[in-house]
Image (cartoon, rainbow, N blue to C red; front, side):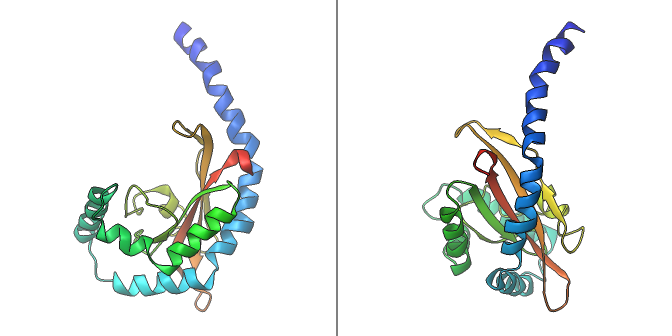
Length: 187
């Protein structure tokens, strides 16, 4: 029982941090991330990739994800480079750079949870097994998800990920999702 009393005060500061930024993160989701989600280039690239990957089964997706993971940090990284060198990835990187430290990463996912474009290398290619995709794409139009705030030990920053479902403006159907990493101390 003594261990519980000692551990409880250690947990309360994290709750305070999360509550302190909740309103700002929701506003960021409804304004900034929603705006990114409706960008014409984002929508067109997702639609194009959805056509290209429409026949992939889960084994093929897992294989691609494994390829991606093995290429992270390598000089020879054709799958990663094919995504990072796209015009949309360059546009996302520019958005991140112009955010003055608020945005730590941006990546766009298709209807299978695969990366379409990103501002920097992600640790994996398939996001379909994670809340950022499941709590947006699978929920429907205008769905958003705000992750727990975590401290990045290497940068000492408190970060959250804000994700938003992306819909085709012509049909209203959800076609993908976007995730934006946020340094909450810069909001």
